[in-house]
Image (tube, rainbow, N blue to C red; front, side, top):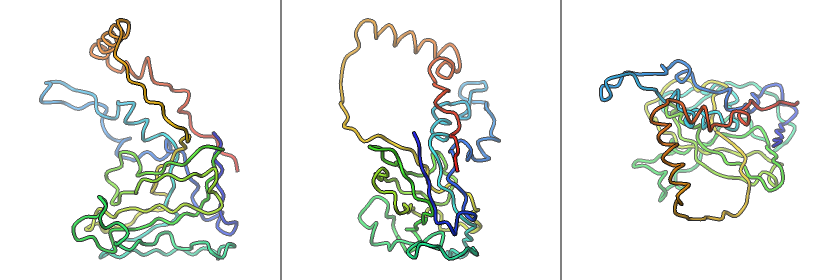
Length: 244
């Protein structure tokens, strides 16, 4: 799967490039213990750091990164980002903008007291081109509940729409937050998905499948890490190649 990122030539040297998600893991995951004592079990148990599905979700695909520091203070967003005027006259120059709250009223995204602050938008500085019949699935960075916003999930047919950037709307979920959103912060978690009709098939286990079920669950109960050792495909999770 080849993904082509393009940006305005005047901004190329100022922008953080979209990065493989595996290179954007948060400090808390790196620093957390692999085991923790459970009062219920009376022994140490493995934490989510040793859960391959949890970690693989966080390392799959790529991240769109915040292009500059954004300061949040007293409910206001500000930045000091001195970049050249883009060559494309309709190109954004601010790292973020806002949606009017009426755009989400009536949806599950709207909360009581929804205000202008609630609906933000991270502006895009990269176009994204995918191979034919592939779309881009964009969502909140997986398992990143500590971020003070929640990126809205969406899907764009980037095999056809790739001449302009994709903006990433988000809901600001931490009205009391004050501080700096740092340059390079992951703001959108993206991965390609193929557009094809699904065929849903429903079956009951046959005798062989019952045996396989019991054997697999038995192995899981007896040996820690059996999924990682026997079933997880490591080869498809190598870091993405980069080409200028």
